[in-house]
Image 1 (cartoon, one colour):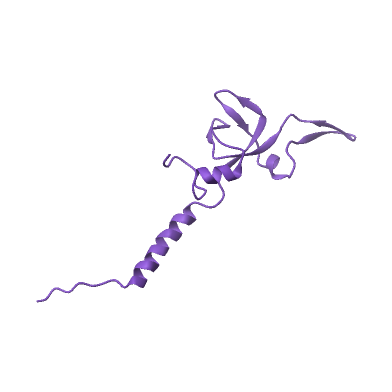
Image 2 (image 1 turned 60 degrees about the vertical axis):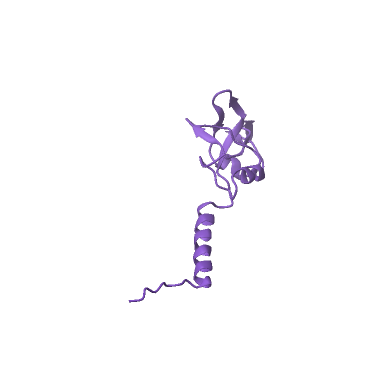
Length: 116
């Protein structure tokens, strides 16, 4: 009996390769990992205090509270997005405030502990 080998068509190989590439890219979106932090809260060893995302959602940084009857006071929160950081115990460090730099550091927007 003659042994026959099945030969893959080039279109099958290309389509299979495209599927693998699509899966790899969809696993890492174009947006890097981000946390909303208070820029005024930095401490050596801990980093920036992570605050609620709603503090970073508006176009302006910082927030103010109301005391009632038309009076308001300014809080000392200077909130901003902090990208690709290590988060521990409610604090973020070793990141960047530059979104474009975070994407450049992480390749296709991947963040985490892969490669260096």
